[in-house]
Amino acid sequence: MFKTLRSRLWLGYSLLILVVLGAFFVGLAITLNRSSVLYRQVVLQMRLVEQTLVRKIEQEPSNPIKAINTSLIDRPVAENMRVLILDNRGNPLFDSHSDTDVPIKWVTLVGIRRTEDLNNSLFVTDTNQKAWIYIGRRLTATNQYLVIASPRGNLTLKIMLSDPMIRLIIRVLVFALIVSLVMAAFMDHWLAEPLRKMAKTAKSLGLEKHNPIPLEGAQEVKELAKSLNEMSRQVRESQQSQRDFVSDVSHELKTPLTSIQGFSNAILDGTASGEISIKHAAHVISTESERMLRLVLDLLTLTRLEGGVENLEKKSMDLAILVKNIVEKLSLTAAQGKVRLNSTVQNIPLVLADADRITQALTNLIENGIKYTPEDGMVTMSGDVVQRMVRIHITDTGIGIDPEELPKIFNRFYQVDKSRKGGPSKSEGLGLPIARQIARAHGGDILVKSEKGHGTCFTLLLPLPEQKTKAAEENQK
Image 1: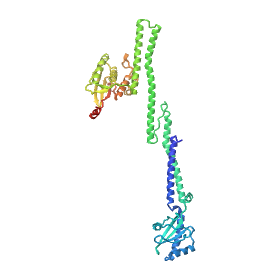
Image 2: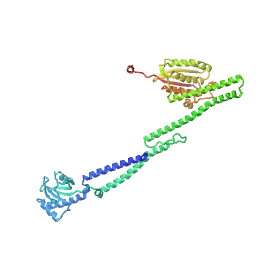
Image 3: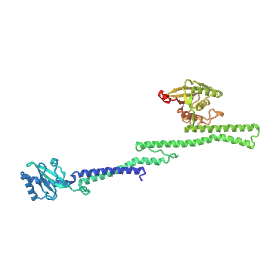
Image 4: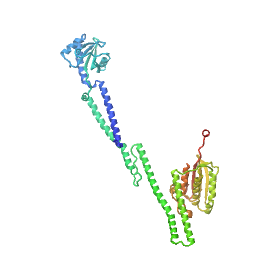
């Protein structure tokens, strides 16, 4: 019960409406209980009696009690109507109900004066705590007060509903209730409908035929829809990446496996019978096996780096010396391709990094530059520091990369141009993804800039170690 958003919204609206209406009725009842509004007819009758008595008293101003007695004999008032004459201290001089009702407690004459000044009525209690409605008027000739009182009945629902004003208020409240329900239905549609659409659309997240969630409703709902759309996009990209990964791995393993199977069958069925043929077949099998092993190891490395589970042995290291050693190691490869290597990396601050992994990343980048630089070209290594990031630039003079291909070069198995030179040393397209993940595992990154026909520049970013304050060093000691 009340598990859905719609039911909870309606429950909230209903409780709010009931609380507001209940508070209004309670306040109205308390106010009416302390007011004579519902006794307007009684007050009107008392005013008529008062006017009649005042006219009679004006005929005998010196003796108002006699005038009242005469008037009550000539024109009797209602049985429950009580006529009193009070002196200027509130003591009763005349009481038409002195034989049937207990005295009224006139503590002060302020209330009587107020009823005269404001043309209003007030309440007073007798010695038995019985409530009376009264009006009063000062008799100037004798400095006495004429008071007309009538017992106030208990305020009941019947009395309230019999009053035209209360009936009008109830009609207004019923109209307000209907308007509130209409507004609640509108609010339910405005708030809950986008969420219901969102829930329905969210069930198809990750499916091929998935329509984006419309951005409608309140700002928070729009933000939620935007987040779900982004999550859906990431899910589809992840699923597509998995499909591409399986397809690429299958494709990359198919060629060496086919070669291994073919040459092993040649040995088994005697097709490769001579010593030279058998050695050639064995060499191909060994080469393709090594290629498969390298591919699997690279995939494992890339997976561990992406998952953040690769164990990095970070130590303080000099990148200038590291680049120099890599250049020396690759100088023969560059010479075979008639490509010159030039390093100007020097005076670079020490960084905290895994030397083997950084060597692997830089080697991949420099080998990539050598591979795609034409004869008589050059691959240059330079370095600098910007905003506490060490930057190693590997710039080649190759033909560059098309702008539409730049966002894809760090994808697994992606090769910019499969027709460009590579020959027997053709890679599987994992070098750049591994290099970038190594940099990111160190808190850095790899950026690339390329202009078609003017070469490419890869930049390895590595953060400098955090500077320790003297206070921190003393605390460690």
